[in-house]
Length: 176
Image (cartoon, rainbow, N blue to C red; front, side, top):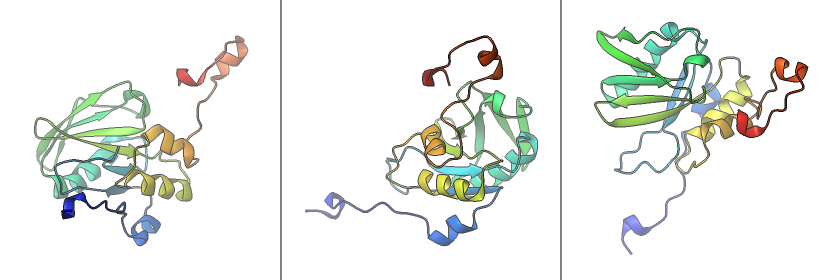
């Protein structure tokens, strides 16, 4: 049996890192192997919904570990305003908006190398945010970002808009 055939226990970041997480924190789990088997590559807890204020720190932190970041994919409805691009550390970073929910941010290094980070809502409690971030960076995590936020109490399973209640409309989980 070769060393690569021996199953390894999930690798976690040291507990001290999770306990120190606060708004503005980026936690990364960067694999040095060719396959990245976890569902997420890290987690980000922005301080606000102002992407112009938050994104430069994220891109700077990622650039140190990943190299040049060329694109960032975000949900336009989750942020106050999304410009088409920002200049960060003297480099143009293109911002793509997708209607995918505010649970992840997609980072592109080069042309095709993508990384997916859980986005913890800025108003999350410290305990819920730390739990969500710790789960997101587990090497064996196969849970998607939305479910992690629900499981850790960071986000409700779904919300019923007030207009829907007034008009007698029904809302189902799949309509989230």
